[in-house]
Amino acid sequence: MTPTLTISRLTKRFGDVEALQDVSLTLMAGKRAALLGHNGAGKSTMMKIVLGLIPFDGGEVSVCGARPGSPAARAQVAYLPENAAFHPALTGEEQLRYYLSLRGESPRQAMELLSRVGLAHAARRRIGTYSKGMRQRVGLAQTLIGRPRLLVLDEPTSGLDPVSRRDFYDLLDGLSAEGTAILLSSHVLTEVEARTDSILILSGGRLVAEGTLAALRARAALPVSLLVRPAPDHAAALAAAYPQGLPGEDGVLRLTCAQADKLPLLAGIAALGTKIADLDVIPPSLEDIYSHFSRRDGQ
Amino acid sequence: MSRILATAVCEFRIALRNRWVSIATGMMVLFALVLAAAGSAPTGEVGVDRLSVTVASLTSLAVYLVPLLALLMSFDAVAGEVERGTLPLLLTYPVSRLQILLGKLLAHLAILGLAATLGYGAAALVAVWTDPAAVEGLGALWRLIWSSVVLGATFLGAGYALSALARRPSGAAGLAIALWLAAVVLYDLALLALIVTDGGGAFTTQALPVALLANPADAFRVFNLSAAQAVAAAGGIGGAAGAIPLWQSAASLLVWPLAAVALAVAAFRRVTP
Image (cartoon, rainbow over all chains, first blue to last red; front, side, top):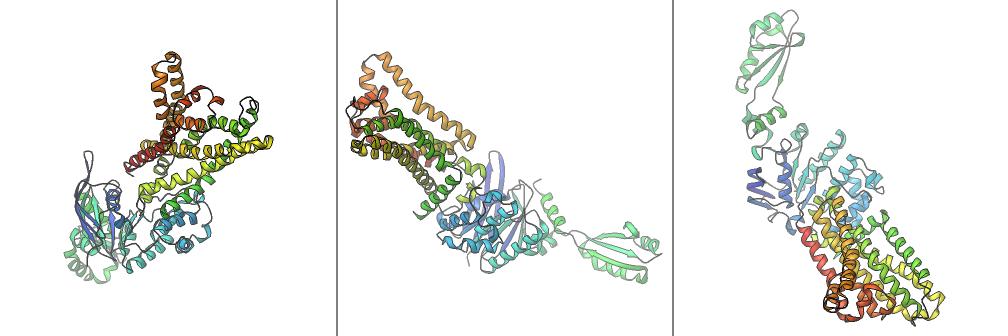
């Protein structure tokens, strides 16, 4: 099976600035990849190259087996720009009818697409009267036209409320189940955590990490935190047993250890028996993993 | 073709909502009616029907008004999409930049055609109403309408090119007004000044016809005046029309739109969203 998107050793310069250096990745049909990175890390640049909107300086990019931006590639790729914008004088329905015609689809599907993103009630109103979240939904609706094989979504959930975000990811799940490959960028790490197959971290134009969340977690090998709450009157005994711990509020002791030392430490705490009232194990968050990789390189 | 039509329908709708259709039509009707009323005096003495005289006056009006309307409608075409941020998404669709520009051109030409037909038509109605013999001039009226649309195509193309070069609506508007002043007003003033200083010498006989053909607005004026044989009714630069064969002014009129649209497509292709 050939990948939907292949990027190998991609390089892009803006004057003296290396916006992308030696970036390689492959995205198979039906897979969802999240692109993470600071502002200016190269996420939007990479997306625009995949869409054929801007040229690149080195490497190779293949979109559905075609050159990015070629008619064959454009017919199979849909894009949602960051802050999707439309002509304010058109209604949502008219705008979608236009996009449908451009893709060679029947304009009659416009209302159905707007219903799928929950905008049927505002279809006949001008886009100039829409809120940011509503414009984002129009943008989302146009990506659903004609079963694209690759979806490129730049910060797709910015401007959406939490419920809409969940609906949005449900839509994506449906598309990827039908074989659409999805490349999306996001600032909100917790939402990509559960909803994507792999995570790509860009930093200073380089791909510094790539893989499933579990793989990245293992590679980062960040320490685990344990919050131990002593039973009444046993705070001093606990602090004496673990002098390396940091005492917090209510006598709660915070211990950190490497992944490999976690089980022996737990066994030791459990051995204290009734002196312990409660215990929480806190794995490193996606934010911790993200800062670990994006800070290590290219800053 | 369907993509060009879809773009044209969308652009026409936008122009309708932005009042461009009513502004263009209103201006044309208003000016044409004023001319029709003011131009009623010289009939009889010239010895041609009333409508032909009106058409000669309308030609002088169209030389200024059609390029102005065309530039006003077109300067926003590319720069506006860039500023609104709608261009990147549009360019990811399976539609070529040529198709996008042709779609916009089709919509704007339809508006110009509508405005010219209604405006000139109103003036023609006045002429025929007061002088039934004026129906003889209908051929000249029809020629004025289609040549106005062709002249409009030239300045629409030029407007798209400026819009793509400027990339910001404010800059594009400035360039469009500058082009209108230079091509329609200053060019003729410069020619008149040269004729006066030349005093019927080599410039007037050799260079002037070429200079008139090189400017689409002048070619339009020369074409309509010499085709209607209404040279006598027009003064100024138009008086030179008799020296230029009709096919030459027609060729200039028809070649200019192609050149302007080619320039616009070349400029649009250089825009990176």
